[in-house]
Each structure stands twice: as C-alpha cells, then as structure tokens.
Image 1 (spheres, rainbow, N blue to C red):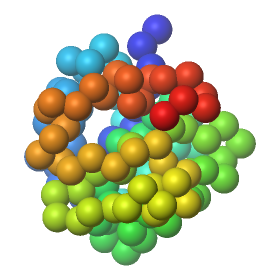
Image 2: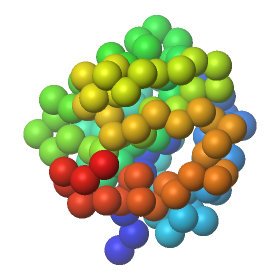
Image 3: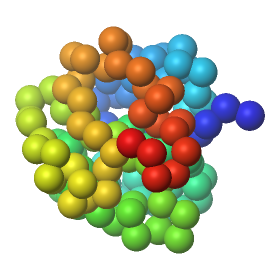
Length: 122
C-alpha cells in the first residue's frame, strides 16, 4: 500500500499540482486541507504517514502547524514548502519537519524519498 500524504495549502491550484506530483512519486494523496485547523483535524482523522505543508497559511503559519503535528501520538513526516519564504535548517528541525523545499523545486525533488523514508531518516 502506498504511503499516504496530506497536502496542506490555501491555494487549490497548488494542492492539485502537488497531488499529481505526490501520485507520480508512487505515494497516495489521503486528503487536502486549506488551513491549519483543517490540517490538524484531517491529520488526526486520516493519520497520514506524511504531510506536505505550506509555510504561509492563513491564520496559523505552517511552522506552528508542524509543531502541532509533531505532538500527535503517531506524528507524520512533514515536508515544508513555500513559494516566497525560506526556512532555515534550524527552524525545520525545531518544528519537527524533515526538510524545506521551495515550491518551484517540487517537480525535481524526490518526494518519495522525503515523504516515505522510514522513521528517523531525513
């Protein structure tokens, strides 16, 4: 069974493109969320193995959402993305994410390796 991924971004068009990339990487889109509260609700309900999470969400920013996801009983692997922000490695580690990738680099990124790696691997 493919690894399940929750895509979190306030832009429906990006969620659609990201979903295509996730599926092409051999992963499964478990669901989509447009903001932090919806992301946390779906993460608890669907229990995805991974979350592709935009840093710039309305209301809660992606870093605080990542910290909340890291506190779940079975925390998913979190990959942070953004079109216009840059997240330092220290911030990535501090919020419990595995990496940060600019959105324009997603098509050339190894999403399978980033989102489906065994726990403890980054």
